[in-house]
Image 1 (cartoon, rainbow, N blue to C red):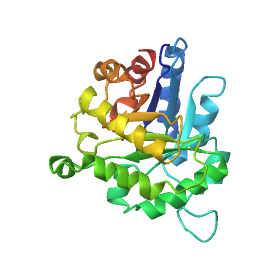
Image 2 (cartoon, rainbow, N blue to C red):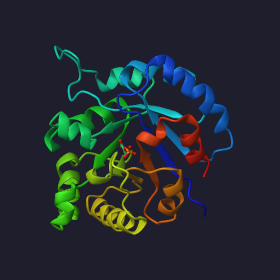
Image 3 (cartoon, rainbow, N blue to C red):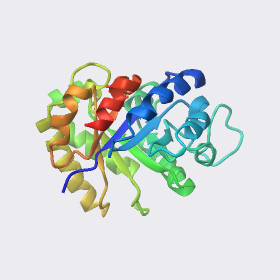
Image 4 (cartoon, protein in one colour):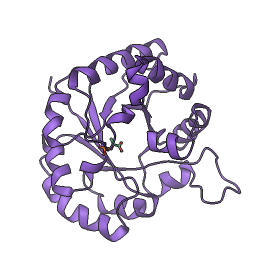
Length: 242
Ligand code: PEP
């Protein structure tokens, strides 16, 4: 059976509302023949307008982060319920840039995961080791720890994992398909032990249209999470059509 891949884009802190509108005016006509599941996470400010722009198309819009709190006096925060109402179907959690620059911990991510599920958002939990950890032969240990810290025992049936080695994000260095496959297989086995079944596992880290096909050929790679290459509507459309 042919795999229906998940092609997810993370726009990070790029694109204003007007720029996002321009993106979709080029992107949507191009992906009409795509059979992939296409996901895009714009910044919060463009969430609502992007959700409106993709209505009637197969594209799902999501958030790049949510608060760990339901509501309250938390200046600058956006709750899961707010993101959902603005049109988000999913949320990225624990991206390495958030772990690094905003000091997100496993305990915090567990709370965010709970909030996401309670609001009906599909969490995409990002995990991955640094270059030093890989060199020290600790990649699997680190990834398992990140999974264990964030995943509590609650029902986790609508969950997606993104394996994103930190050394491959925004660096142009991609893990080889074999390296990614090996980690994905281990992640799947670990999730099975935690009774998490049928969980798609995405690979992320400098994926572009020319590296995508080889990654998707691997049994345990269900799709990709794409940063830089998702900003260009023609390039990202070419990935969704592969
Ligand atoms: C990302 O931000 O999740 C990512 C994988 O970025 P890039 O594709 O630019 O490495």
